[in-house]
Length: 328
Ligand code: NDP
Ligand code: GDR
Image (cartoon, rainbow, N blue to C red):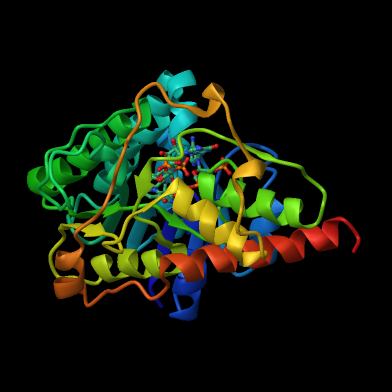
């Protein structure tokens, strides 16, 4: 039975990846931080077969202990402070967790498997935010990185450190450059879930309007369930490498609002949407669109859920959740 250790187990991707690995017969260990993590019950209910270990990406000794307890064949580093807007207000914390945390876990893997580098396979959750002010359209593995936020800068550090450990120590360390991926499990601070929740509440008469930031930004949005499959496929390759994972289609926040409101039968949504500078970013990533031809060719991966289907799935899920919460 293969064993996997996942950091960021309480997050969107941690849950989908756990389900995928459990369905493939893996023994799955999840790193959970804090002495009373509020998401503990969610993890226990969603993926009861995952074995939880306490630890924090900023605490190397806890990572070494987690390695020794789980004796993994594969380590997926999904843990991070992942909300871009928050990273300006907490730049040092973001750097410690999202950046230096990668070095800590790479070190833990290296020390644990020093007798046979490559024995433990490592996945780093890199991000399209690394492209920032894009230097090429669409973005691919070798496009110049020009991050636009403390989060993006921290991810660039983690990405290059992963490559460096592969080249320096012969580790099987891969970096997945994943573009935005969403689902009904997405945190409510991210734009897709913020919209799907608000639109549902507006439809049910619980909320009057939604206050947004930049409506012109464009993102290449896919479904998280599809993207964790790409992570797993990277780990099954004989040679570690870097891969862009994306749909290759980009949409604006306006398109997102369009599809979300249409799903609940509202075509003329402008009167429900306000904008406020507090949701604007000091430096914006205007447009992302990924070229995932390498992942498609080498990994045999392709996205199954497309934009409209994804947004509809999220709105329908939130309509049901909001109805239950409102007792209707
Ligand atoms: P989430 O924000 O949903 O989850 C982040 C996870 O990181 C949570 O489990 C959180 O745990 C954990 N975490 C935070 N701080 C620490 C810490 N100090 N030590 C250990 N764990 C910590 O993110 P997603 O699931 O959406 O994304 C997973 C990874 O992929 C992240 O690294 C993200 O940056 C990256 N990524 C995501 C993309 C996306 O579109 N979703 C695209 C590209 C990359 P807790 O509950 O304790 O806070
Ligand atoms: P992003 O996701 O920054 O791309 O990072 P987010 O959903 O937060 O923003 C996407 C775009 O929407 C614009 N926007 C708003 N965003 C939020 N959150 N709230 C608003 O009200 C709002 N109005 C407009 C933003 O300005 C931005 O352009 C996500 C995270 O999951 C990262 O961890 C991951 O690395 C990248 O995706 C790829």
